[in-house]
Image 1 (cartoon, rainbow, N blue to C red):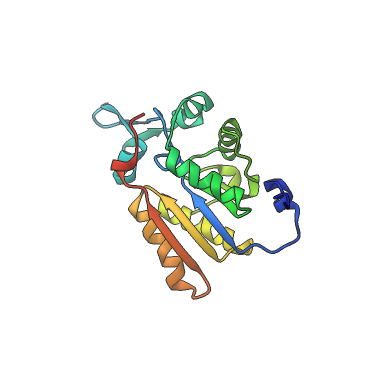
Image 2 (cartoon, helix red, strand yellow):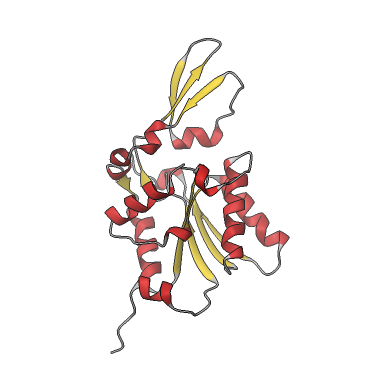
Length: 199
């Protein structure tokens, strides 16, 4: 019986891969206690938003946002894995297919460390943390930056995508890529709130 090469061996091969499964992180692969802290500088009111709340949040000029929870590797590692989605990710890798991450978080290395903690080794070049200053994304919204990340995957040679995300706007913009370019195949899977366990 032929031994299946490791994922790293696949990465090192010169074969051109065109198909990839892309996963969001928060509320798609893991549910954490991370919150976005909002301070209203007019009223001095302070409150917190979950990643789900933030998907629908409309920022106002006098709002100050604190994302420090999302830089805490301990909070991330303590999160509850969404097992059935994580199983799809691991199964994809076992088949030798590429896996990528596109997340609104702001630290690529932190995502890598989290995945390693769960015995998943994804090449750093396939992890896009769209709010990481080092990665240089410029879109005005999360959805625009995620679309920009997809374009970077296209530049790497991928044209056949399956995308898992919990936000309808991100799914919509991903689908727009296939409309803009007939060479792009885009399957999407919206992770609905009723499928997400409580943290």
